Length: 218
Image (tube, rainbow, N blue to C red; front, top):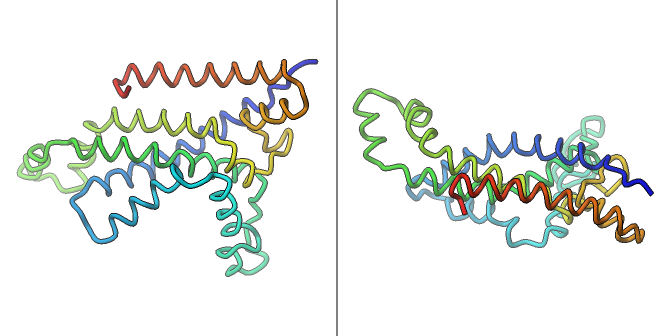
C-alpha cells in the first residue's frame, strides 16, 4: 500500500503561517516582557506560558468554546458575521501558533533582556527615539534569540496533536497534519506508512536540532 504524503504540504503550510504570527506577536510579547516590571506583567507572562503546562486537549476545547459559531466570543456577533473556522486549516494554524507561542516568546524575552542598557542609552543620547533604538539596536542584537524561538515554535507546532485534533477535527485530506496522520495510520494498523511518516517527522526535527546547534541555542 502506498503511503499518502498529502499531510506534508498541509503541515508545512500550517507551520509557515503560524510562524508569521510568531514573528509578529511573539517578538512583540518578548520585547514587552523584557521591559522593567509593570502592572499586569506577571499575568501576561502566565498567559503566555500557559500552553506549556496546560493539557493541550483541554486548551483546544477552551478555544473551541471561545471561537466556535456559538462560542463565548463569537456569540456576540450577528449570525451572518460569525466566522466558520472550526475544523478548517485556519484552526490548525491557530493550534500551531498557540502551542508554539511560549517557545517563541521565552528565547526572545531572554535575548532582549540581555541587550546592555548602555547601548540603549548611547543610542538615545545620539537622538534616536524608542522606535529607532528598537530597530537599530535591540532587534539586531536579539536576532539569535528570535531565530531560536522561531525554530522551537516550528518544532512544537510540527508535533502538535491535542490542539490540532480538537480545533481541526482530524479530517483526512483536509485537516490531517503529519502528526495526526501517524496516529491515524497506527489506529488503522498501517504500520509501514506510520513508520514512513514518523521518519519524515524525525528528519524535520533533526534539521531543527541542527539549526539550533548552529545558533548556539543548545
